[in-house]
Structure formats: C-alpha cells, structure tokens
Image (cartoon, rainbow, N blue to C red; front, side, top):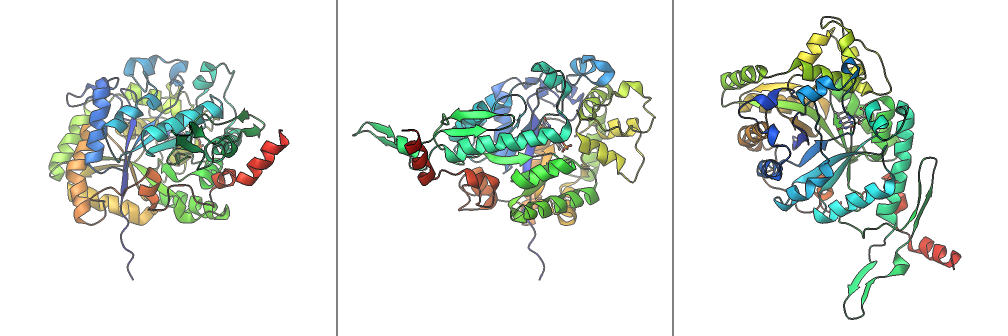
Length: 469
Ligand SMILES: Cc1cc2nc3c(=O)[nH]c(=O)nc-3n(C[C@H](O)[C@H](O)[C@H](O)COP(=O)(O)O)c2cc1C
C-alpha cells in the first residue's frame, strides 16, 4: 500500500539582527531587515507566518561576535554580519500577542548562565504564550562568547555536551518536578493560593551546576518547552537523540541529510525512545515566482546585493578558521576546531565535489549552507516533496534572501500549491505546540523522554518533607 504523503512542517528561520544568512541583502529596496529593532517589524513577520500556517518562527542566537576573520570583528561590524544581535527572549511576548497558534522557538545556550534563571524565563514565556514556546538548545561554539563572560577560552567540544546533559537534568527537575499538577489551588474563600505539600525543592548537585531551590514559576502548559536541537557531530547527534523533539539540520546534500536522520532516529531508539518522537527539519531557502523565469529574475536581482566580506565573516565565525589567511581559490581548509560548528566542516569535507573558499562563500551568499530552490510554485513544491521523500525529513526551516518578502512569497505561492497536493495543513490543530506537533494527548513529554524521570512524585516529596522536619 502506498504511504500517505507526510504533511510538510515549515518554520520561519530568523535572527534578531539585520543579517541572518544572506549578508548584504539588507540593502535591497524590498527588504525590511533594517527595521529589525522595532516591534512593528516582528509583529508583521509573526502575522505573515501565521497567515501562511507556518508551524513556528525559529530564532537563531548566540552571544558571540564573529571575530575570527582577520582576528577581529571589523568585517562583521562593517557588514552587520549578525551584529548588532538583540535578545530574542524579549521579542516573543509581542509576537504571541498578535498570533494564536504560531510556535515561538528561541535559541539559548546552556553555557553562560545557571539552569535556574533560564528555566524561570522559559516557564514565564510558556505561560504567556499559552504553551507555544520552543527552546533550541545550543552549547555555544564561539570563543568570543566565552571571553565575553570572563572565560579564557571555550570548553572543548564533547565536554560541552556533557555539561549540556547536566544542565538539562537540572532544568527538567525544575520544570517537571518542583510543582505538582494540583499545587495551585487559588482558593479565594480560604485564602490559599498553593498547597506547600505539593511543591518541593529541587536539589541538584552536579559537576557543573548546583540547584537548591523551589522553581519560581508554577506549572506552565507544556512544563518543559518544546525542545529543538541542532548539533550534528557524533556527540551532538547523541545529545539530540536523547533530548530533542525536533532536530534542525543544515546540509545541502539529500544523501547526508537522509543518513543523519536515520542515524539520529536509530540512536533515539537505542535510548528507549520512539524513532518518530523526533521531527527533523532541514535548512532551505526558496525563491519563488509565478513562473520559473520570474523566480530566476528575482534570484539574479538578489545576487546583485550579496556581500562577500559579510559571508567571509560569517563563515570564519562558524568554522573557527580565519579565512583571511587563504586565497579565495584555495581549497576549503578542513581544519577541525573546538570553537566551531564542526558538522559544517564535515559537510564540505565529505562532499563529492572539491569546494574552494570562493565556492563556499558564493553558496553561502543567500540563505546559508542549505539548498536554494528557485522556481515556479509547482517546481518548488516538487523539490520540497522530493527532499521529504528521499531524506525522511518532516519539514524545513525556511531561510530568506529578503525579509519578510521571502516568507510572504512562500505563504502566497508555495503554501496553496502544497495544500492542493494535500501535504500542507489548511488549519492549525488546537493545543500547545507539542500537541500541534504530535497530536492530542501529547501536552507533556512522553514517558520515554529523559525528562519524565524528574516528574513530581508525591511520595518522594513527602519523604523529603519528613526528613527535613
Ligand atoms: C543548522 C544549524 C543551526 C545552528 N544554529 C545555532 C544557533 O542559532 N546558535 C548557536 O549557538 N549555535 C547554533 N548551531 C550550532 C550548534 O548548536 C552546535 O553548537 C554546533 O553545531 C557544534 O556542535 P556539533 O559539532 O555537534 O554540530 C547551529 C548548528 C546547525 C547545524
């Protein structure tokens, strides 16, 4: 029996900066990136995404400046290559206020603050968004970010993930285990807000973190936010297989994407999880017109605004390799660094073609390292469906050349075509982001998820209370 085609999920990929993955395009007359520091721009983006039935907005972040190129931040600063970069946690309430269903995904690192304060902010946002918040868990790959918070250098690659595992144990304990479901009574007549016997202190004594506190926030609709992850190294996949509900991949090859998806699903099963409890999203950029000729003309127009210096600043920052030391026609130096997105280096090293630096920055001019699909609505839909069929991806993080035009073109031209083909939702499912993604009855993480073992256990809590008498 033929498999029913999967519904394609789509997130709008964004950053709180004038440049995300298309350096130079902020100069295009139809681009609104320079309004990035206004609420009006972001509420317009949120409305555009919800009108197009996007699943979420997914906001990249990191506190490091791209200062690897030529050993300083000049190239990044002069081209706005992800600097300025503002705090996306402060954007989300405004976008939640003008939408009803759109998921709101925020990247935040486990490396620069204690679990307690981060857990509090996510719980706050989960309440204010009525359960639409997602956390893209990153460990931070930037040496500049480490120096910014007073450390001499960045922690080595694999130990960063060990620290992340411990960080998650601590936040799971706060989100899942500090307050019991019925702890909040809010009884006006009796004047009782909460039942102290159903609230307990979290005691976490780990190698990196200590927590000895009651979570400051009462249980939110999802408790643990919907968990995204984008590590793609061996250790990164292990971490994703353990914790992630959605994984974001940045490959341009279908073969590597398919291998990644299969490997992470298999590892999730080895951890006792269901292989389908993880959704996979691939980075993609779509340039669409009513006709192929119109789409190609748009692409040629966008190319006139690309900025090689900005692309070099970004690429050096991501790979940790100072590309100013090479000629543009040198082969891409596949040097592995701890302060790097190592999977990015693997992507180019493992490619069947030999990439020069010029090839890579040219490829990265528009939308970053993922595929760029250019064509009519039918051609784009064919290509998206072929990615889904050949890789087992569940959907895409849609990057743009210009914003919000890239999202709007997708919503206006590609979404109706996908809906006609029966592979794109015509309306949102009710409930929290987790329920919209996994279906009714999935408000909380499944019992097979590592967070489940931190759930409030009334008996253990009573024992703890007695022991402290
Ligand atoms: C597609 C993709 C998107 C990413 N987005 C971010 C981000 O927004 N912020 C960040 O600090 N790291 C980001 N990363 C970096 C990863 O979280 C991770 O730190 C990095 O890839 C190194 O881990 P790995 O070697 O397991 O890939 C991203 C990585 C990929 C592959």
